[in-house]
Length: 529
Image (cartoon, rainbow, N blue to C red; front, side):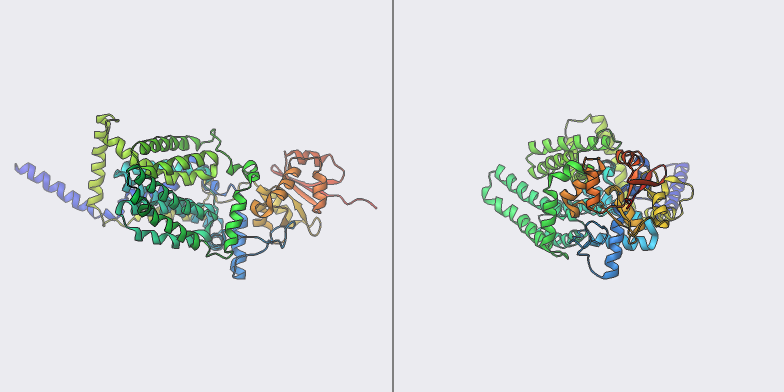
């Protein structure tokens, strides 16, 4: 080797050693996975305000404040004048407490920050499981991005964000049990179920996942002709499912929570009238991400059927159906689908289905990523992720003129100015205000306890009969006036362009007292004696 070559090599080594001092600042793909929801939020949605496009956030915050004040979960309603004092199951009470604490510390920015933290944790779990199943970090991060983008359809600052996270954790534990044949790992699931059952009513998803593994593994043994091993493979999952079912009873309402959820989800009325329970609008911006993941999931499901991996096939095909049935299931489908798709993509890359030039290039990139990961393993401190979250939290509290960072209920969607008017005026005492349930949660957030609502997003509490009456008023049913009289309604807050507002403007028994570009307020005129 020449002196020139030796000098160049020494210079290169010195440069590498200098760069290694900055190893703690080098972001890992796990860091990127954690930050993906922030990137997706600004790339695919209107900004942080997207998380506040549903007014239910408002009554969740106020419920948490009631719990913190009283020291126990509520048993009766105090938000409405129509159902005041009626038995109420606040099935997300622990999430409500967390939201109330976050709101106390940072206002709505604190609530949004907690929502983004949940999404970041979900993204990391999905990414790590995809790496474990596929062995390809680049494939894993790509599928994680696709899953998070598809799930934006239901990104709202509400307790339901807990369920995709827990579903991803359950899948990771169950897949680990299958690969390492270590049933002891299953006993972490009942403890997680206790937490899940108090955070959100979707805890039954975890029990369903365990049962799917019981059925899938048993069926795989039957296909192999090993009938004597069917019970041996399925038993541990069935026992874990039973343990999780028992663990879910550890909540303030006991078995009544389960009955309430079963009755709610078993009522077809809600699926017909509530948009998030209906199928996705394929003209929406998130539809392309969902469609791509759905095609991959169905293809992977068929591949697993051919490969006799029935557990993966059952998960992929059943949740593909559920995601098509209801938009609310899409975030759960996304996190459950990624591991199965990862396994299939690993097989596809190792087969002759792909062009050799493409697979060769991908393997070279993957090798480079692995070399970097191995070289700096244990040296990085995830400082980029920490600093990004810190900067994000700071910007949420001081957004300046950046609209995408404003943490507020959208004035074009909610009666923000009308709520100010209501807080300053005393039209009648007490005000018995009719409005849509989509505005109810916001009015609770802004005006409760001085004002109680006709109804709000707690449709499970009000019941289909009452909710239907409210919708009949909204749709200007022939008996709309009689329904309002029955509940002694003396004021109505409506969108300016709603049919009911147009009718009330023509009536002599209703008087318009306020209007802005979003809402119009009517007061009931007392009949002359």
